[in-house]
Image (cartoon, rainbow, N blue to C red; front, side, top):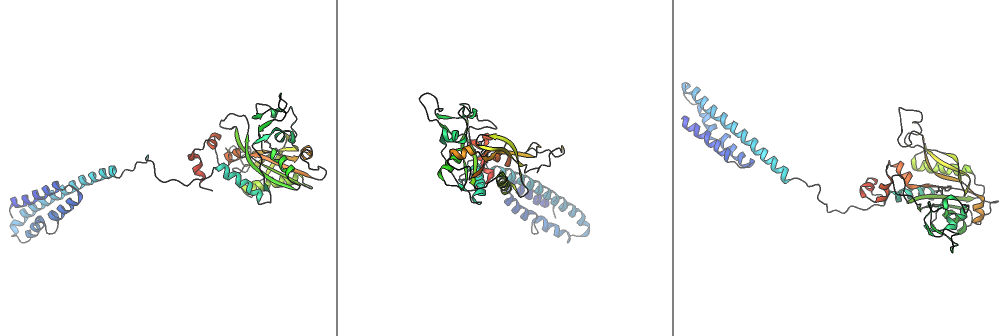
Length: 360
Ligand code: PHE
């Protein structure tokens, strides 16, 4: 066993490893130079057959050569793996900014689906959906609802006038963009014989600037019930049913005195805060962002239909009574989904609507 031969075997192995350009080639070189039939393995096996005095030197010689070969193999293996990893990072990189070619399924706006969900609560109770025009006669929007001619709500600063206002020179009949859905109450009473049970979801307009809490175009849902013997208790029960259907069985409402020209008595309706259920009140350890620890959330206005409105709309107030309420959909959507800026609802950016899902 000549040292030059062992060294040649070693050098051939080192050269083969250095020449291997990728991990497959290195694997072949590894089998050829370190495998069971490689020259160094065969040399190693021959040691056993040597005379005892030659064994130690031969063992050292072959052992050193194999050690050098294994070390070179490991080094080259690490180099080639690092090369491969670097290449994979580049070749298999995904450019997440590339436009994608799939067209996502469309979905209706959360305002629309929420408004329908509210309306459905009443449809399932037998109410009918009623509609009215958004460009409305001043008479329906105000006069029929017992707004006196000098009522502040008629003023230019609240109302978009299309024609008029009524009484301005040469213009007897004002036309407005409706400021609430209540004119549909008047239309419904004039169109139908009592009993009347209607809900009216729809768009309304006021001369507000668009900001985090206002929009000049927004949505309301109106309810009107006219029948014999209806009382405030029916109104309260209807409101409770609505909030329970929308927010859960443990929900309830409360009424606070208020004034509207078209209802008497009138009330502001609040619902129990559906997040803290009132437990944040007077409890600094459990503050509630949704209701500002008030325990209640203001929904909108309601009341018993003013007999003057019944008369103006051809309903006999001796025989019939009724209740009505109306509230803003945007506000409701905002606290139901923690929307902080009303502009997000208006602007139509799909990044806002997408988390609401694909409900159609
Ligand atoms: N129309 C009223 C508003 O827009 C709300 C309301 C509706 C009040 C029905 C009482 C009855 O503020």
